[in-house]
Image (cartoon, rainbow, N blue to C red; front, side, top):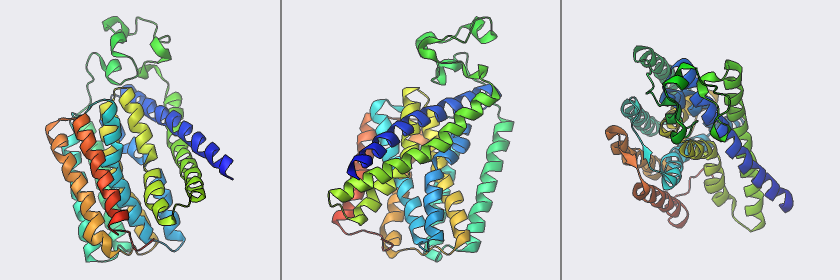
Length: 351
């Protein structure tokens, strides 16, 4: 039903935009209410929420007897997260990698990527490799919590403007921060994040976390049916629409965070999602059944993933900005990756 396919595609895009905005607002509100760094929230709660489609796809593939697809899903998503999901929002506005914990979280992402390559060369990912990955995930979450407790977040005087929930030109003065000004009516209908109740924050986060996978699924289903009508092969659909489709929550969240000028959420979401993809998604999927590694991953896809991490490394370690020039470079790199797959024959055997 081609007509319904367009409805699914359009409806899915609308859901992604709306739920991405809810997730960004909820994350900023949670950080402001409890004095947490927006970057920490993005690295954990937001990253877990936007990685839900990858988890669903990988677990379903493993239960359906196609566990090898899980590795392709994770590797393809990690490549797309850096080159595409960071590249596109940076065309709108430069993204600064200035959070205090960005450098060491970047190193954790690098270490996780290298570990995945080593495990793939050793052999199929099985039960004990899954236990190792989940143990490292637990250690990472415990470390993040300990670091947040030892280094409490102290927002600057214009914290409300920095979260992106209040325009910079309407930033509060001391009386506003002290609560002497009515905060219910703000420009553009925004609400100061610290004034939201715990229930309101939870609702925003739940709408974002639950709605993003639904929107991504509608986009993938609608796009797949439209592509089939035009005679596009299943391999192309799998490597493009589905691979990018599972990264749509990260894209929607990053774009809305850019519009709200919250760079910490953009950078934290991408780094945290890549860490979650490797440690959480592959860890859980490996417990279900062994994950065979296609030879083409050993010679091509894993190295492209590592190269994408290396390209991001200088920005994260120096607190630099990913500007429009870097954005064009990232997007060109992703285009070259797709070209290498389809034109040069680097298609995973699982397909």
